[in-house]
Image 1: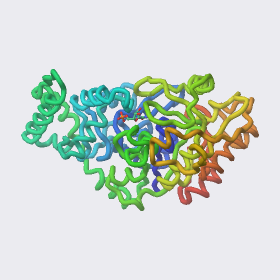
Image 2: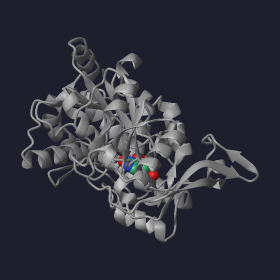
Image 3: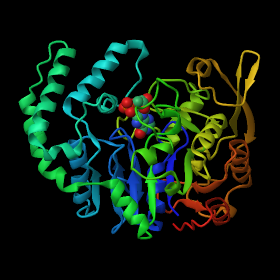
Image 4: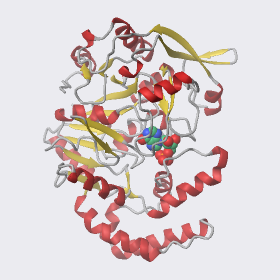
Length: 434
Ligand code: IMP
């Protein structure tokens, strides 16, 4: 059976670690949306790797990694990442492929991202300024440039010129040189074209041959363009439907769906975050959890676990199980709060509101649980967790409506509890090993 692994909160849940950990169970790992706004961090034997575009399965020799049509690809960022991996001794040759239908992020997209944020002023999104939104805008407006277009220099010439000229009209005082953009792109085409494949065909052939695939989501459910806290979202479908459209596979091929959630909540960028702690406790979570963006270095906003949001993610994605990460960050807290509902005036909401203004006005309703003093860091068996930590996990599962098949207790691959009984019960024929 295949498995989709995606974010059940606002991104940065630790998907990189979970995907890396589970990769030995799969033949192919496929990224389906987003771009180099993602920063999937993986620690192996104390060594840190940050994967932005390349699937987090890349660190396992022999596993094939694909970047689907739903991803927006900045060739400069992709080559930089390939070079970094090669320098670290990870051979990507012959096992990294990019969909010919994936759209490219070109230099003008980055400028337009900055411009659009500046024009929004106080209403800015707080994007990663990687050009993600403008690249998806071009895709939807049917003027985007795709990896496959690199095979047709004449068509490319016209389209790039049209796009650069349109951008020059939009950006005051701008004289971006289309010749330069084209020259650089044609140079990059030499390196990118050999990686291009019909990813849908490749994955469907692989499945027919009995191969197993893991689908890797980027960002998180609450940042999804349709189901997130619009307009404070990214420009792609980070939810499970994105795996189908972003790779060209049927819904039955997705198999099981695992949501990754932190044992608390973070968000980077603007937009409502009901459980946000703008106090010492928020700073404590930020410090212990090292909650600074893997891509931009921005401090993340931190708060208590929001079960309303995770329940919503379970509904939108049909989650079979959770991977609960960073439990160890809560070590040593005297008490821990869990948000189980929202209050809006005299109303109590148990469902996540689709109206962002209503969400912004909501107050969290908390349950309080005792913390634990004995550290959980590095614990590998559920049995070895302090009783209060076991009770905290059980309560999170009950209020989120999903069981935690995996619990992460540290950044290294080995700092992980795999709960075989829950894996067996929730993921059925998928028997995962670390
Ligand atoms: P964009 O994806 O750069 O357009 O940014 C849109 C929103 O999504 C901003 O609030 C970003 O901070 C957020 N975002 C984008 N990528 C990530 C991610 O990988 N982790 C967490 N937040 C992200």
